[in-house]
Amino acid sequence: MTQPGLMLALTFATGVVDAVGYLRLDQVFAGNMTGNVVILGMAATGGGTGLPVLGPVVALASFLAGAATAGRVLRTAAPGWSSRCGALLGGVGLVLTATALGPAVVGADTSGARAGMASSLALAMGAQAATARHLAVKDVTTVVVTSTLTGLAADSRLGAARGRGALRRTAAVALIVAGAAA
Image 1 (cartoon, helix red, strand yellow):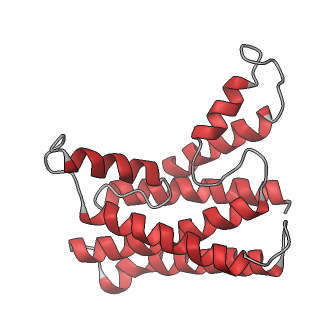
Image 2 (cartoon, helix red, strand yellow):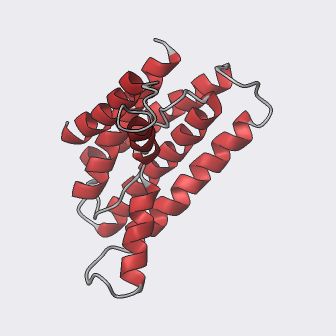
């Protein structure tokens, strides 16, 4: 699989992870930290009663820990693909698999269990995002699509009329939506 293909597959996985986090783990985003920050901002000002706080805080801290860990592992790695990237992304896959099996083993009917699962998903997504950043596949960050949508619109015929990267950008947006739908 090519690097862009791998990054697009990881983008699909982020859609799955964020949909599960939001729908089943108390409205927590494991990959999209902007969503958690907005939820926490609204909760802090009383703008939304009943908004979750524990899950988004734990997810945010875990995402940062995952990204920092991957950053440390890749600190001295040459740009581009390396065995370290493979090991990190393999670890992401293992964490996602273990977390998916978690409810069958320990259940997910308490807020603590849900926060723990959101934490492990966010840790994995942080490591994935940092690895994707290191790999620097243009227009595919794997965890967010805001900048991808911006590039798609800015370079479109209505924008700068450059048309560069439209297929990859469109695929990234479609795959995060498909992952959420799955």
